[in-house]
Image 1 (tube, helix red, strand yellow):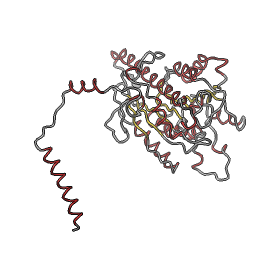
Image 2 (cartoon, helix red, strand yellow; image 1 turned 90 degrees about the vertical axis):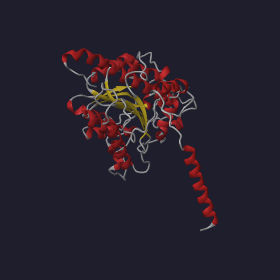
Image 3 (tube, rainbow, N blue to C red; image 1 turned 30 degrees about the horizontal axis):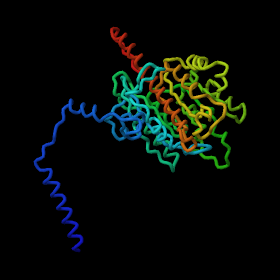
Image 4 (cartoon, rainbow, N blue to C red; image 1 turned 90 degrees about the horizontal axis):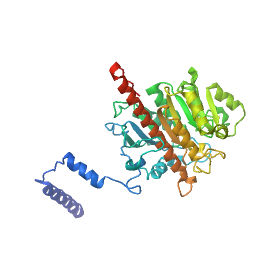
Length: 394
């Protein structure tokens, strides 16, 4: 044996002996609940600029690998942007949204518009990390996202109030709504969709002309709702329409609306806010969707005007302001939201002030507020019916 090898082995053994002797006879301290609570009070608070970039400083767990961590609402990232038709970069959206959420904390999380603090309420909300989506194979990526959403959506919730947990996804490009809706169907059956966007996203895949057409090329961030309709993921076919809101894009022609009509969507344009106001938009949405049917909420950040959200892949002038969108989101808090996504944040195109990611953070905050507030209302209904032996589960 070479001298150097003998020397290294001796050092290794000596180090192991030192560790062993150092640990010999040491008692492992058992901490009381009171002591642990004291440590949390002393050291558990994080300022907006401290800590890792979990969404709003929420507890962070890689939920896909820690099934014992129960949650009522999961924040889950889907860093995928290989299905875009224009500017890439939304794969960095989850990271940007989390970073921009730093000023949101549980101790200052009261939402005066909603009248609650979603972070200090009945729901256990976790940042569940990201789905490790492959960037080199769209077919595999679609399978991964479908499997991940389905797995998380099938978990038992932390609260006995819920029948199933909710997922709020940070995108990523808008194609992720297809696997999210596949998972939603497993949990809820076909759902209705409230879709905030500048674009229809119900385009027939053939509307993207190419000599090199393929089966995989059908899956894009502009065709996913058409595909969802074809797969029976939406309740639209049963006479219960879904809703687009904020539309203002150019079309291939009026036949695009015909394809959209065939899938039973109601369209609200961006310009309608000038005539109806935010209250009129809210009334139109609620009148169409009601408050009982399960609804999946999908917010493409390009529903906002590029003045407010330039950091996106397909910006369209003439959109809503951030304040208008927030007012509308607060007005629809009575919807039965069973899942949501906020997509198409591409931070490379935003300014140094993070205005696009900040807008996305506020959208997530409003969604969480609505989900938690809806749960409080259902809790009251459950209590009222307890004497009748009826349980209302969300």
